[in-house]
Image (tube, rainbow, N blue to C red):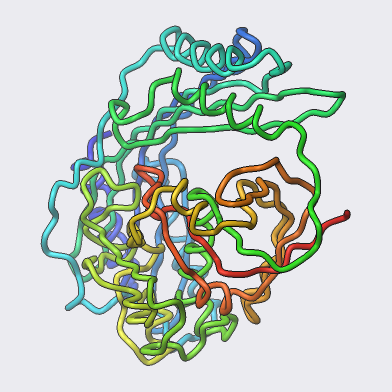
Length: 440
């Protein structure tokens, strides 16, 4: 289905809600198709197709809210869904903060952000790419004894959002990826690791051989891992994990956690929350960006802005509901952040290791030991022990711990080795000191 067809359906739904007596309403209609193939040990393991469509309807009767959804886009099904949402609204309690986003905030400009690049690849060709990826990983070292497989994923679709302010918008988008995971064995002990590449446009993906080679190399390097002595050490989070640290910060300054008072960064607006080296921007208009959009989930216009400047928090991330709860205005973040960009201090990962001198390079985190209320942080980890700026040996069976407030303020360098086409663009992050606990 084309975006214009989805927009028409969305507008028809809004008309149905008016006829049903709703004081206001909003709806989202979507359609998508996808293909995922995987191979293991050179043999086809999985072929999946998906073809999804659906719509969700939210109606408001004053300050009573009802919600319903369906995967059937026939006219009768849409009427039934609107009726169901209206019936639900009759039995919900009034909520003074619910309702559509303010009409004055609706987006009026819809730039083409180059988000739709269909990959017309048939199953046989996709399987061939996956086999090339896995073969490249297995060829890295004879100690790679097994494979968890390689996969090729492609998704393309479109959506439309409309509300009773008269707003209607939508666009097509795509997402593709290549991934591989293998297992290496030495002295009776096994290690696994993986690598991937993802992008809006298949032409921007790494080659299958590059993905496989990196997956294989990362796996072999982990052989011979052992614990280290418990102590306080500098810790370098490699880029994919540094992205997780930034995501935690973003969650802490997002509306839901703020109005529920379940954030370690409550009442921090305008305050220093991190090292002066930390500078974070949000750019919803990044071409081919993983989280690019001209408007948020409520139709509110997105805008580029600075979130953290020289370590000082410049703004929260709010949708209309959380904004009203906090006595503020929506920032166009209903549904989340749009392309978070963390400014690098200019070093490569090798240069960051030299800066660190002696410490821990973390390449894998285990468990979910993060308390959003207090900021206490404790995760199982694996990686590499570093001395004099050089990797000495792989490390496993350790726990790293600190508090997110302290970690953010102890950032001493941010690398330029970011993973392209990610929604959180950050390089490796060096923390001055954390507690590393070991079984040794």
